[in-house]
Picture 1 (cartoon, rainbow over the protein chains, first blue to last red):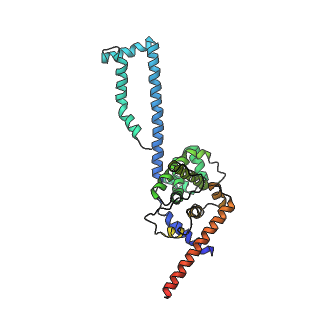
Picture 2 (cartoon, one colour; picture 1 turned 180 degrees about the vertical axis):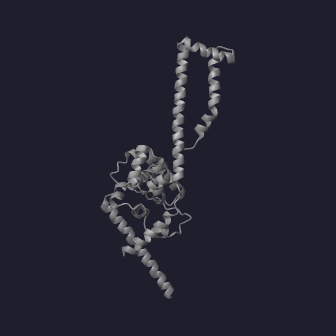
Picture 3 (cartoon, helix red, strand yellow; picture 1 turned 180 degrees about the horizontal axis):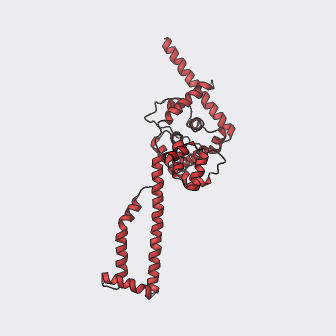
Length: 106
Length: 188
């Protein structure tokens, strides 16, 4: 009694399996997107750490702070505006990448 | 490249999983996805009450999770069984998100009508409960042993065996009744 049912079920499942969608490429694409996202966050963290380190050195060490301030001054002309101008310029440079990075679906 | 792909096709699931885990070899993992995508999708389709789109999303999540957890697969069982348990847990997690009151056991989800409701498989499984349909899928499509099924759904192997047997009997009776009815109609 079981054998015909076994055969029926096996062939029905086999036919249904053939209708399954192709997932391998989608999964690989999503893995790659996740990896990019991970690397992006790492890069962002590294940039933030670098900015913090430069900021601290800027505040604490005149020998390092002075040349950066002078460089910024040559663009902005105002002492107070110099750090903001540098940050803003960096942000403008990074903005398109940042938006694309945060928007990327995973 | 083609030679490498052919070589991968010859390897066992377990060997490919070890390669993918230790060498972070995506080609090996892609081969594993190709081998198991149909079964995992069909299994999830049965679990989700025949929702093909939901099954596809869950199958993708299952494979992404498999990639992350590959190092946990020790090779002491079959890769297919390990992957099926991930798929089952993925389904339960999605169910908890939408219906938090559901306990981690085989759920009785209402079977939704779908475009292929008239398929041979749907016709056969319409004679059994949702739970029995899932068990039959695990047995016939995933080709898991009763022990592996029991481990995944958290039921004793004897219970799994008897439920599958009962489901097969129900189908046999229904199919027998169908064919007798057809013969009677034909004989007039």
